[in-house]
Image (cartoon, rainbow, N blue to C red; front, side, top):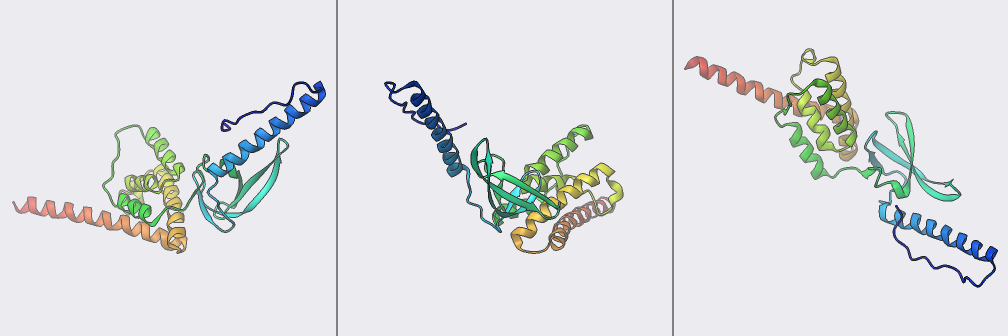
Length: 222
């Protein structure tokens, strides 16, 4: 919705055709002002070469800013490439923020995601179809902490045989999505980022298994 603007109508003493022409000019001005004001409010001033995150597709790169005519009005568009998916997306600049397009998360936010990753799994006792839908929603939110929650809840052990096919699919999707942002934030390749995440989860599992083994030993000794 465009912001409220003051409308000044032309002099009504002029000929009808002149009045309609000026009203038309006013309306065009209002539309253009609305677009420009929305652009100023929503534009995060991304530039060519910037890494960004789009919720449904993850990390991409701004290839450039293009201009296209939509409904007779020139609109600026961000051209974004997603190398991993071999996809190119164009988003109107003034719609960037409302579409969820954002910069890479801060190192502080990523640290919180890593802490979440190492936390205790919180699996609700509901039907798998419902949980799967919730996991997909978290992944497509683009929020690194929400994605870390998916990994935390689905990574049961180093043995993939403990996971169903659909669990492995969702787990892999979350792992790839988070690894791409870790790689971009820390300026490392995706393979190293993936290894880092799996190491963190492996350390968590090893610690839990050691705690269980210690408790069992103590119980046996008693």
